[in-house]
Image (tube, rainbow, N blue to C red):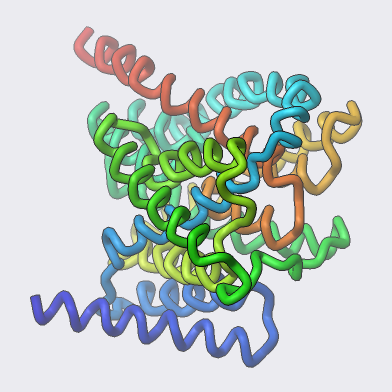
Length: 346
C-alpha cells in the first residue's frame, strides 16, 4: 500500500509540475498536455509511476456530463442534417479494417487477433479487453492504441491552429461560482448514477456514455442548462493527460522499435483516411471543416470531446460521429472475435 501511494504521489507531482510549466510558458491546454508530457517522460525514463485507477475513470464522467448537457432540443433538430455524414462511418470503419489488418499482419508480423484489434480505432480499454478475450497480445494492443491516442492528441491541436486557423481558447465552461448549487448537485448525481448504472447493465464506455445519456435526458427535459464548471473540465483534462503518459510505463527498447513504431506508422495511414472522409463531408456541405476534422479524427472519445470544447466546434456533431464509430467497432468486435477463433481452431 505504501509503495502504491508513493508511486501515485510521484505521478501526481510530475503531472502537477507539467501543468505548471505549460501554464507558465503559455503553451496550449496546459492541464492536458503538461501532465501528458511529463508523465510520458517519466514513464520512458522508467520512473516508478502508477495510474490513478478509478479516480481517472471518475474524471471521465465529467466529460460525459459535458456532452450530455450539450445535447439540447436544437441539437436533436440538427440530427437529420448529420445523417449523410454519419452514413459514411461504416464505410470509414470498413476501409480501416481492409487497410489496417494487412498492415499489422503482413508488415509487422502481428498474429491475426492482435492485428485486427490493433487496427480498429475503438476505445483503448475496450480493444484491449475484447482483443485479450480473442487471443490477442494485450501489451501490444495497449501500446499501439496508446501511441495512436498520444500522437493524435498532440498533433490535432497543431493542425487545428495552423491549418484551420482555430484557437484553442474557447471558454470550456462557466466558473464554479456562476452555476446554481442545485444544478451542480444534479450533475454530480448524474455523473455517479450514470457511471455506476451503466456498469451494472454492462454498457461499454460506461464512465462517459452513462453520464452522457442521463445528462442528455435532463438537458432535453429542461432540468439543467449548463455544462460542468470550467474547474471540473480542467480536472478531467489533468487525469486524461496523466493516463496517456503513464500508458507507456515499462516500455522496452524492443517494444519501441517494433510495437510503438508500428503504432506511429499506422497513425499516418489513419490520418490519410480521416482526411479523405473529412474532406468529403466538407465538400458535400454537411459539416463545417473543423467539426468534420474532429468527427473523423481517430482519437479517443474523451480526448476528442476536450478538443471539441476548447475549439468551440459543434460538440453534438463531433460526438454523434464518434459514438457511431465506437458502436460499430464494439458491436463488430465480438463477431469478428468469434470468426477469428473458429479459423484458428480450424
